[in-house]
Length: 227
Image (cartoon, rainbow, N blue to C red):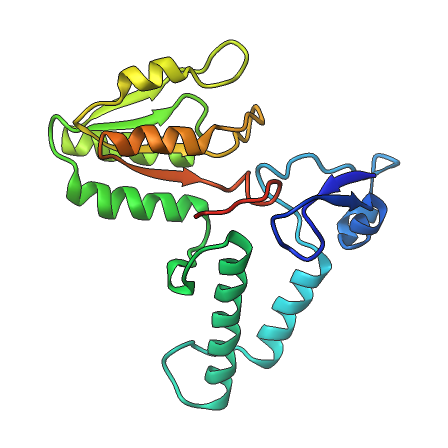
């Protein structure tokens, strides 16, 4: 038995996790690989989808598929309702204040690029500073590096200590009045290090910077309250 998020989806205490029951939700785990039961350890790159997700997607494409928020025919209204219900479910899951705060993209990589290229590209100027950490996924490193180079902003990297944690003293020294954004992962996909996000956000806000958090590795494993 292991522990996991509460069965009701809230962010309170943890309950025992029945690993065998969870494995039954993933048919792919019943496969064998070289004569042994498949053990899939690459979820940090691509996570397997549980049966319920596959079934809901299949049902949507077979019975409800239509453009959302554009038409008044029945299929479109059904698709729109399902889309907005999903947005509300994510809002509750993350404890966001408003459903309008939830924006769907094709994935974390697309989301970071959207913010970096659209907002960063229109905001950064020569002399500004863009700060990332040394253990960022390339998806939260290269887009900021690219837009910094294009706009003339300085690109600063918070070093990683020998124990895999971030050097917060170095981070404090890097922050300054020209820091425009701090981009950081809540949990490192390589090391599993949990970033002290709340503390680092407060430090960034004190110098007037915004913070972009890559939550791809954190949300499936930790209770996350965006407020």
